[in-house]
Amino acid sequence: MRKMVLVSLDAVFEQDMKQFQEGWLGEWLRHAAVCTKVKTVFPALTYPAHTTLVTGCDPAGHGIGQNQPFQPDKEAAMRAWYWEEGQVRRETLFQAVRREGGRCASMLWPVTGKSRAIRWNFPEVLALPGENQVTKMLAYGTPGWILHMEIKHGRKRKSIREPYLSDYAVILGKDVIAAHQPELTALHLVDVDEMRHLHGVNSPEAMAGLKRQEERVKALWEVMQHSPGMEDALLAVVTDHGQADVDKPVVLGNALTKAGMKAQVQSNGMSAYVFTEKPENVKGWLNGHMQETGVSHVYDREELDRLGCVAGPDLAVEAAPGVVFADGLPQAKREKAPHGFGPGSPAENCLLAVRGRGIREGVTMPAMPMRDVAPTLAGLMGIRLPQAEGEDHSQMIKMD
Ligand SMILES: [Zn+2]
Image (cartoon, rainbow, N blue to C red; front, side):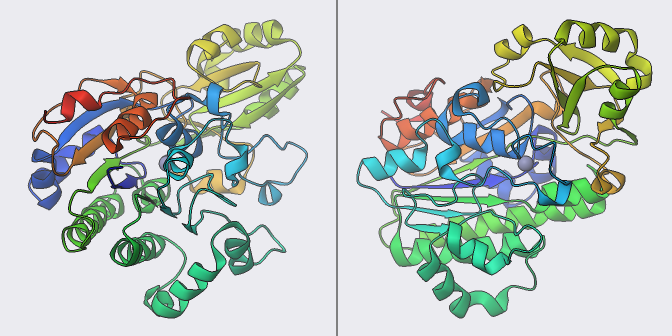
């Protein structure tokens, strides 16, 4: 099995490539096989996208259709996220590597909590009110290793907020690569996503985040070059969605209730799921009240099925430019740039770049759906991912 380090740069998208052109990452990308038109999933959210990146299935197949399950009866702060590997309905790359005898490490990759496939797991989980962050990490991750890392590196971490959490993930990634050379090492680096949510897509903070991400990729590439046992390893860089600036928060659920519609809404940011027993009525009303509801398009179930949307929602709506759907949550007020949009957005184009021995340099891969990424990575590693629905493009970028 060919080893791989898989790095996800959250919220980095096609338009960012010009920022990288002059620097180290631009040079690295010129030696890689690259696709800058990996079309993200519907809706363009982090957990559905990251699960697609490792299963090769749309959300309809893997079952992770949002960051959080729909929990209308719970207060926002009390809502759990999709934290556990067991919630994914298709085999992941981690599980496939494990099945074929390899070892996996993961730093903050979504929906990997309590994984039996990942030997070194620093999971992305968040303590709810009344819970303890450290206890939760230990319960969902690899406790002995996390504690060992905490003793060895914990003092280097300024806080668990961004950009420091991404820095710490890279410290752990470098350590595990040098010490164990896992067959698959995955890292999810949230820095730029957080900066864009707080400050806007093209804010100086987001631009500084892009620079930091470049430094992190460089640090991982360099540790790969200097670790015996990693000579043939590939570095794959992926991203999950772009973002767009907004200035009009809309609480769609309130508008529907006021109109006498029996419907519940789960906001995805630039889109929203609608749950109702009368989708025809609600669709009709929304189509007649687009202006005041900030809706630019109503997706019916048939269209959602075509988009690979998860089962459950009866309808979905796309936000008009500048609109963000909010469930009346306080964080919507500080939201400068969300995502969660549907197909056709300029922010849908994500990155896949692979470099390493035996990979054709400078190859541009054609546009592809995000479900093609996992089978392509599996093909490069020489492992099978039989439940993937996407296409394997690895032959195009491998040297004969
Ligand atoms: Zn994301």
